[in-house]
Image 1 (cartoon, rainbow, N blue to C red):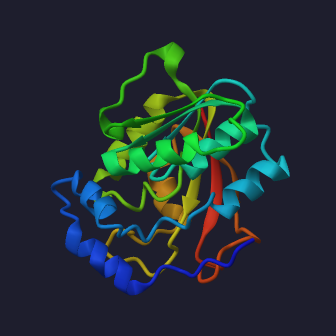
Image 2 (cartoon, rainbow, N blue to C red):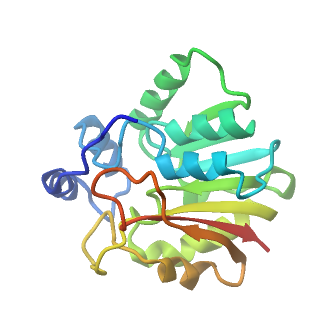
Length: 225
């Protein structure tokens, strides 16, 4: 695996200067300025480790959703590894253009269909038969203002079918701070908002954490009640 340097503090500070918490569409400004400290250029290793381990018997048909998909690495990986028809959703038109370009350049098409769309996760509505089997949240929970976390949990419960799964990358696990994004978290940050609608079935550190992330990230799987 290529060694990818950890995010530089300067990059995060540049991001803070671009983003306006009251205008989510400024995420597109960050993409246009190529200030994307969350983009590691590949699928998050802990996600690959989780799926390849077989620790969870994830469905091999159905639908998946990746909100805040960025360049789309994980959406394509989920469609390829599990065969799910996967939608990558992002507010940034630039990010979606990048994701579509990377998908088109794939030598081997994914097993499942992959669709990339510009859209607002919080405005997404699905009828019962359209609900998804898996949602993967990598940096979405820590990117939104903490005040939106109750809305995040309600939307997750609304979009995932009973028995489906929410996969969360819990990062960065640092001393709690109101400065972000990314806003620091701990496992209890997710319990606070998911307990009642979800049961946690996996919560572990990754042996494949990138430089600078060891001990600061976990991956968890939550089953929808």
